[in-house]
Image (cartoon, rainbow, N blue to C red; front, side):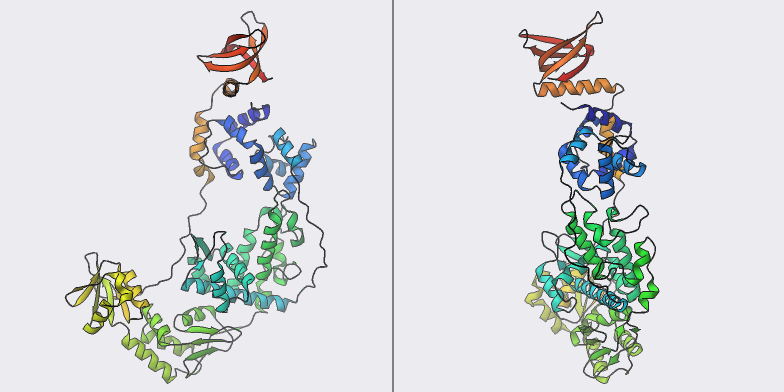
Length: 570
């Protein structure tokens, strides 16, 4: 049978407005599909030991201290009391429920061990700025790699070993730890998003790639700080020292590892130094203010906006190439090395990819001439003309009847792709001087392009159109309003509310006693006004009467529910 705490909490829940009740359900991680029938069901679940254990894990150290004070009879401060009451761990007066008190006293509280080694010496601002530059460039390389081919993740949600190795071999990261942390930073900042078994770039990530190094760093740093949980912040919003983070959630055994992971991300991004202290430009941000970006900008390597184009079809950037230029250059050349000076190599394949993505010979020449310190070398100019001349021999587009039509001025080329085994899945069928497939135009286009044929995409009227093959993440809408999430459950609880809460509670207690064939002491008000107690084994309930076996006299009694004043378990 439920205790008085559940009855009191049920009355309190019934008195909350919908928004407050939804906030409570969300804070306690209640499933919206819970099969509760009334507020008494809700109260019993919230006071269940397993539910309380989950709630204790989310208590900050300050909230845990406040709850300890409540157990000792000292009313917790107003803010702490409200936070605990919102999650139904204390009543409106700040008194802990009995089951909460029991769970609190029997749950081990984690105390972080004292440091076993002295803190490392702080690094210079110049060294921290170098890490900031390297991290920004490495994350950009990770995003470029994910645009070329989505990163895979394993069942635990982390980056797969194959793609970890791919990033290392491409020079995007120096080791597996850097790969994992940079992907985590990208996800935290909203630049990457996990979708099924893949990690994809978001539209925000694409925009981020074209930002300056300083803007890239600042945007990610801001989002990393915003993602840090409340337990490591003071009342005013300032971050507590990193060394104290391990004790921020004293009832969550998994938290110390999470705290280490958060600290690792901040260090990787040069938000903090090797000693855990905020970097020179982050001191005010840790206090709730904004970073001193001028202090960082003065220490970052200067960006360049020109490259040397060479006869061997390479481009050499004599410094950190401005990101928006780097993104454009990568669309037509493969980057071979990254350092303070980066190198890029042009080839027939990279130029064909650029033309496929919408570039033309004129746009390529115009961009490269504006970028080059050495003009446009004749070998590169020749390769552009040759690639552009071959490109577009095949034209792929809709035919207006739901099919895809492939045309060419070269009948032999059509005959070649018609028998190409790599294109067999398209099911190409001759149709006059063209080929027809029921595959969509975009799918047909990319299959033909991947087979290294000179193809362009066109509209139904034959006008050329550019395609972007990058698969971007489909970001879900913002977290819905808890009131909407729990609307059905709250409506069910409201519908079960009765004007006579005491009668509703008594009926519930009797039903539970009958289901468990419990032995209960029932106090009945007799017609003459005298109260009499009967000890019975509850056997049935119906028609407004309780049936029970009175083992004292070995008879079955039938007691009118309307006359029952109270009952208790025996």
